[in-house]
Length: 199
Image (cartoon, rainbow, N blue to C red):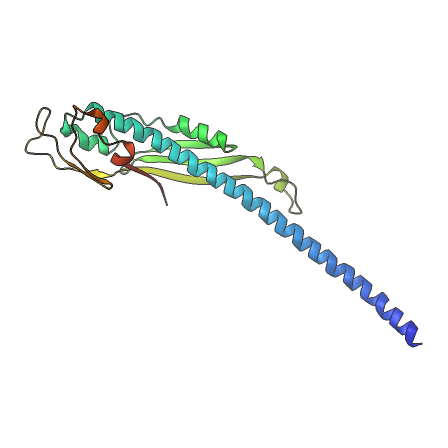
């Protein structure tokens, strides 16, 4: 009799065991779905950050060229450091970086101070099949904004103007006294401007 009772107990425990295993499998697949969605979201954010920075860096380089062309006329420096005088056409570069990160972006220049770019990335890949309905066709989106800020300050000597003494640039990474006769010694884009992601 005792032997039969033990078999009955084992028979009653088996359905509970099956339910526990099924529950654990469901949780495992749910965590996997969350992980898939998180990875896709991270991919979208990476693409957005890279695209926004690429657009801003492209325009930073154009602003630096504009500054070098006008280095003898410091009255024009202020406008250049504020992002004026060049077209904000860095969105083409943003598209390239997004494609390299398997995404597409919408991109728009941001006027004002500091100028920059605002992008939104959309992943080409979907989250994929999971136990969560609808994820098989869902793609992730993420926004990013990059701004261009001057990394240097200066004061115009007297009236300034072309032909007069050039101001000293006090920059984040040091002090520069521009000498147009030695263009190789002029500060570079990374010296003149700070490009970074904005919150």
